[in-house]
Image 1 (cartoon, rainbow, N blue to C red):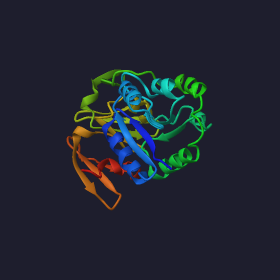
Image 2: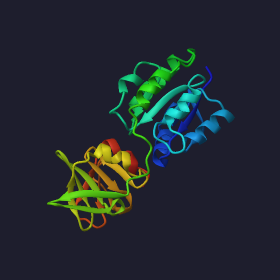
Image 3: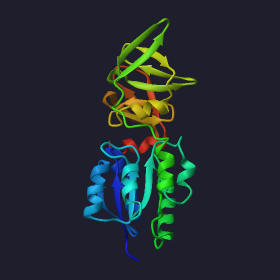
Image 4: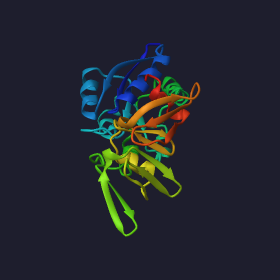
Length: 250
């Protein structure tokens, strides 16, 4: 059987690299022929070199993964790669399309690829209904968050998001730490992540997001255990196994 030709579209360099590395384990059956950095580029590449499978990040600049899928879902299998597990995951599981929840793990990717191989002779299904469902629940594309507002006593403090060293979940609140401030806000980590610049702010644990520019030292505490020392703050931030791959090339 010939290899299935694949396109990967994601605006995050680390995610593109991660996906490419994981797919390399399956190069007997799958071939990556195009890698796009946004939705419009993905469409251009698809029209130039049609593929069998498209792995699409949902939230991308210019055109979203949903926009891309709406145009080509009748000509290729669509697999969404998403950090938004809060919306319509069950819709993905209907079989019209599949999804990979970020950070992508090899075991889950293998399951998806096996599904694709088993379904290779089936024409791509119409995913219009699914796109409509999840599109209505997808956060609209907005510029990255620039300011953090925190209620301190009777006052509202504002400071640039670039000053933040790390965010940390604290029961019902999120702790926001800068060199001068250590405050609590009601916005959840999940909602914060949606508005942050992903090239600058990385989630390294289910309860922590760090400013990459503030990483001073990556401590290896074991084969899959890491912790971070951040400039401007003495607290050590643990990296969970789930996110350890972000630091393997460093």
